Image 1 (cartoon, rainbow, N blue to C red):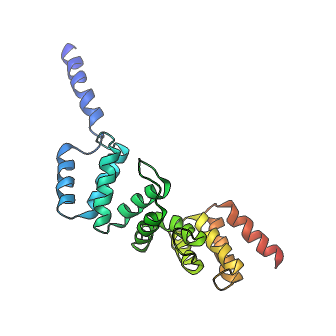
Image 2 (tube, rainbow, N blue to C red):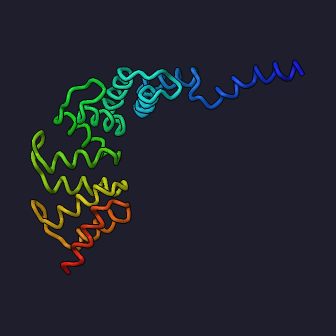
Image 3 (cartoon, rainbow, N blue to C red):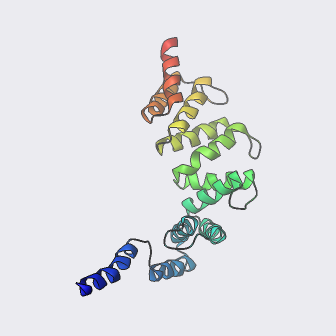
Length: 197
């Protein structure tokens, strides 16, 4: 009985640690891969330091790794770092011009989460020249990445025809997709278009 209890006391902590995240050897391997120019791994490592996945949360270290990954053209690293400059988070200053560059590169590199924020910058203008055509194209890229709000934003641009060719057919298709992605404004936009005929 005593042996069973001791065995249980030894095994319980081991079982609790088994799914706790990356082991130190894995982190060392990732750090070596990042240093060797595997930029995507830099971004993955940054996420771990940002979220505390198997390591102590270290925001500064995560930022450095995102910058390293972005310098190597990893779209996700650029997108995540660009969003931080956009928001002024993790101790970084708001720098919308830098954010626009990073987010655009990330979107073009098919990191869909970066497309809508940079589309909004191009739609509004300010840190970048206002370009409705580019904004619509970026919104549609975000829409393809299943961002319902971006689908509705692209639809609104096509419906209004401000700076781009007006197209009710394209607007309706985008509103429909937005609605299918459970974005209420997309459903409302489609309903309004259907009411008008």
